[in-house]
Image 1 (cartoon, rainbow, N blue to C red):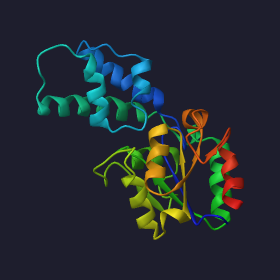
Image 2 (cartoon, helix red, strand yellow):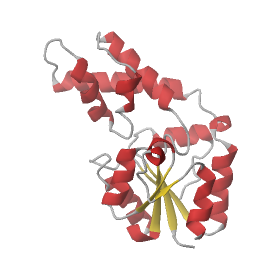
Image 3 (cartoon, one colour):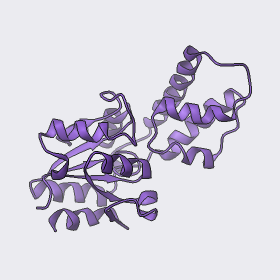
Length: 214
């Protein structure tokens, strides 16, 4: 095998909770009278919660907000989001994703998550993947979000491998940039693939099997 491990982003790669994020941010923004649409929402992909809030607040024209108020707004959004995540179930995990993960594991590869989300473990649990991955590096153990490579570097460190031994799988351009900044090769799906941001730009998730085997 070309790699010893594969490190996956979560949202947009293993599953999709984009709509849940959008609706939660929209609900928070509406409560503050802030304009928010799907174009703005697209700028939040792969970005931490507080950085996402700052992007949304570019449309805010009221009195200055304290840091405490900003934390309150971000927490409110997360509460809306986590409530909606209870709708997730193992049925939301596609057979293509699960079959590909199982095939990679059968080849002896270690599997990890590298996600900026602080809800990673909850989401994995809802999908029936609570203890599936060998390593989970997420928003709870990093101080810098993508495009900083910290989340991937910590995943590799936890696995005991060098970045050159690991393939990162991402759907966001900022995530692909993070992988490259950390010295990883990157396989992309979705928006990042369409932008040509990866070393491998895939049209389907199952292509990872061939990439890892080459």
